[in-house]
Image 1 (cartoon, one colour):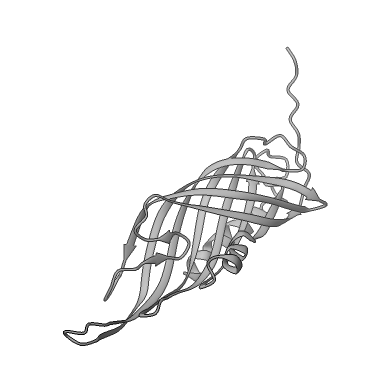
Image 2 (cartoon, rainbow, N blue to C red):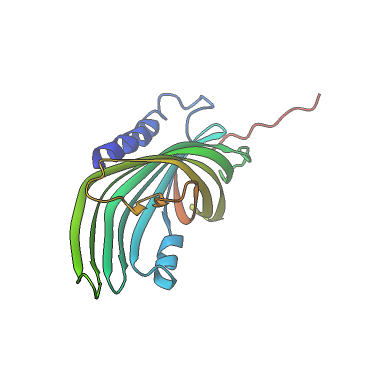
Length: 225
């Protein structure tokens, strides 16, 4: 999983290094925006207290498009009086957004786009079934090296707040989930996707972001005929 995400970071690095050689071209990016999701920590503190998930996002602008990469880690425990189900893993998403307000000097964005998501994770299950007639039955099992992938439709907003700081959200609709290398039992939760039995499945992230600018964005002014 880390090797796969390293390839995504390499894409952003190549974009950064290409600026000096192609600074006069419209498709040369003007900066790198990086951020952290704050919606998940709030949800975990107030509602879903058995789940810990951190998620980060980066984007680079190419004309009216944004190359977007997400990376996150999940540690989830679903505990009841008779069962304990845990999921641990990481995930990434890679995609392209169309910026509907591209001609903006502050590089704000209202976007629609596509994502490909991939997850690598382990899980474990233990439970006790109580039966007065046949006696109690206990089970413990674990799966490792599970992988999953899916597709997303995404829409979002990035608004300039102050200096190089931005904030905004992404709403995503996830579908076509595929899970491989399952072992003793079926995965209930997939990091980065959500509940396995729900397809499609929606998600929401709210980001605080910082933009590293390496050149000014040129504004194209259309001449009146």
